[in-house]
Length: 367
Image (cartoon, rainbow, N blue to C red; front, side, top):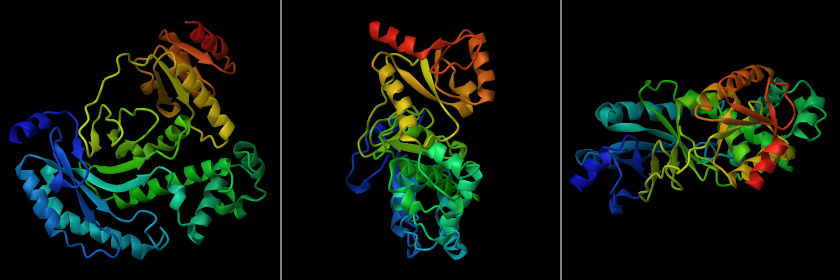
């Protein structure tokens, strides 16, 4: 075990075992996950977990503390309820005092959530959340006509929108996912606001139920996620900033029950598709991106890149597929062209040099 552990510790990125530690084989892992019940009704008795952590620290393993707060379906009060928030914070305070001060140098991070990327599935639509949702609609849509045009679902009054009614059609479900992921991220930020900068919050996100690459990418393209370590299960693309969870390892690391080795692609992607900043709610519009992604994947690797970080994400790419971007991004695309890159567009963007997507896809089919 000691020889194997030294080898695992030399890995540049975490390989975290997630499961029943007592009966596990930890070959190839350099960290373990230890579960802490931090729900509202927990007595916060973590003596056994501390003892277990000590035993694995002595063997050279780092610790990922999995604090189960019951987010979000096990919270019985509104997210705005201050007493509930204070109770969850008490668990964090107790963790700082009883555990972290003794395990600081051995801690990889704290997992504060493990569950589906579709937060809307178990969302508690109590009065405050419905009002917040309607306020979010008013902030993101000029009026009900703008809402209907963008979402493809009729809404006569944004201030009377009913989440349960919207959930009855696919476009409405897409909309609710964007709201709920935003509300969840805000709550994560609130919960971790007192974390020191070197204490990394982890989110274990399961994308299994969502099949659209473009939709999943947009849901995860949140600026606040840049300050959180994501671990993704069954994501339809690889993220260089996330850990792979259970399904496949990513270059940044892995968390799961069975050790898996990251396999570097034989061919690095040289073509990227720009995913817009503005959320896409209409299933037909989302499908346009997914169809292009799948067609290109048949012939060559493709990388999904964020319009928000376009000048960073296009590094190493030679071709950019652009279906739609904001005006500011068009000026950035001119920089890509000036550097020798090729921009391929679905609708003419009036750039200094651009190639039609239709011709590009035909050339791939012939090659």
